[in-house]
Image (cartoon, rainbow, N blue to C red; front, side):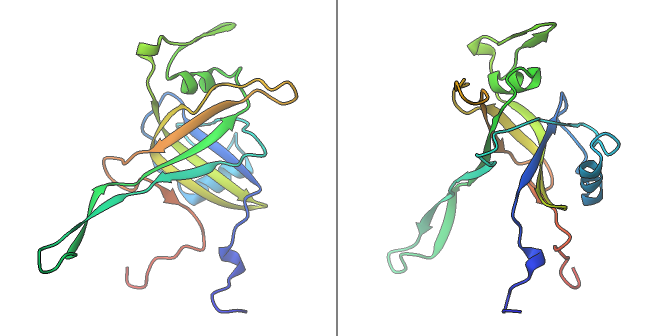
Length: 200
């Protein structure tokens, strides 16, 4: 085995599941066991407060993006660079294209509100539209292996126009900005290969 090469630490996503809060803003952080139970049986293993977002575009995987943090150097006349200070924190987000425009929850996330009724969806007035904050769980799959990420607070909004290609499914582009929770981590990644430090 080459130095540093451990096959179990590598991952190739071939599938993914996206779950978001449906009418809830707080969800207990799930365990890896609970996530694996959901993948094995989405009905019996349902995770309280989270529901599947449904199908997304097959040839555009979920993209994680970031606006890089900015820093300023502080110093004196004699020592020009004594300290580097954070002036603006990095902003992380992900984007995806839903393929289900006839799903009320998708349209609500896209329009930032609205009203679903029997046989219709009313989009809100522009002044009433706002990003919807939800907890989010993304489960990347590599065969039977999973590599999930749970984000307690995600602000979801539209990410461009809804499109209706003549030879493909319609697409509803969404973006989720990862926010900081009041306590705890903004993103938890799960894997059995992660281990606590000795004595930690």
